[in-house]
Amino acid sequence: MNRVGIVIPMFNEARHIGRTLAAAQRAAREAGVDCELIVVDNGSHDDSPRIARALGARVLNLPGLSIGALRNRGAAACECDWLAFLDADIEVPENWLRRLLDLHAQGLGDVFALDCDTPHQAPWFAIAWQRRTLRAGPLLHRQQWLPSPNLLMPRHWFDSVGGFNESLRSGEDKDFTLRLSDAGARLLVLREPVVMHWGYECTWKEWLGKEMWRQSSHLQLLRSNGASLRLLRFPALSMGAWVLDAMALSALLDGFPHLALLMVLVASLPALALSLRQSLKHREPTLTLQLWGLHFIRLHLAGMAFVLSLFNFTARRPARG
Image 1 (cartoon, rainbow, N blue to C red):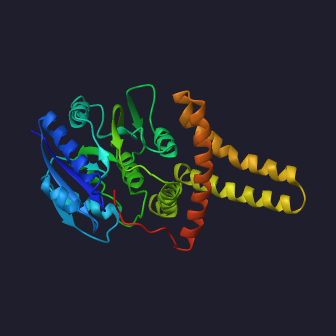
Image 2 (cartoon, rainbow, N blue to C red; image 1 turned 30 degrees about the vertical axis):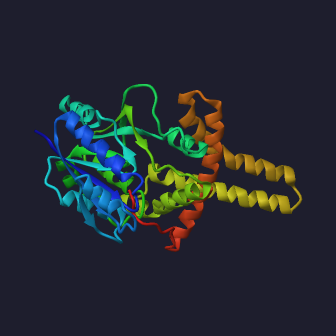
Image 3 (cartoon, helix red, strand yellow; image 1 turned 60 degrees about the horizontal axis):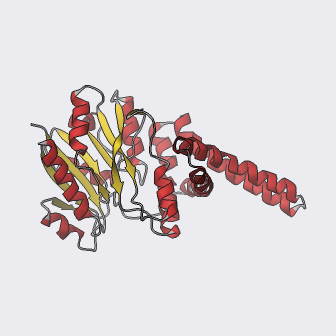
């Protein structure tokens, strides 16, 4: 029988950790596998460690570590044939483990994930931002890298690449799964069923802060993985947007408002291209417009984060999964 170690980093997740653990336990029972729940707490001040222990999880109290270090310590704390990594605000469907273990038994992949969606009560910007990641078409999708709200793999793949990069403040999931892909692992996403992300951004301030933090590791990723088009593309687009904005401001100050407007429109084209690529599959014009605006903001945040990282200044936040 397979034994699965489920590793969940956490910081102040009393609202969500009970739902996350209960769903993981249901999935293990439905799949007929033993599971070990490892919650790696980054120094929570709320009731989340007590809730996790009450639901049968082993809680490791490790404040001050990066998100990659938390996941690595959790993996080291269990001896299991399989490793799963969940964020502390994720609810997996009951057939999560059974479906993914069946795909592995059929020889279709090595590292697995489900698509992630957001509850309908979330604000429009949180729903739109999550929907951009939802896939369409075939049920199974091959990927070069995977995000980490939910990951499942045989333990030997984790060991083969040495786990997560502990020096990264964010983007550790992209770095980890890119290295898995380079090592020969087949990364596979199952489009349905989806996991549910309950820790959605409730305010614009929270969304802006999270995106600023998420964009803070582009320089570290380039240093650890080497320069490549897949890693350089987004920082280059974001810096280009800032250059065009500066040109537009200069044109406006010089008395050329029409040229300034043209520059702003050109600066918005990368955001439009990203929006179209991610929204056309849903055939919703409103989603296209929403993502256009969100990507425009995100490109500027990414450029700011990239410049700040050159001076070793980045947004700080606890590692919370």
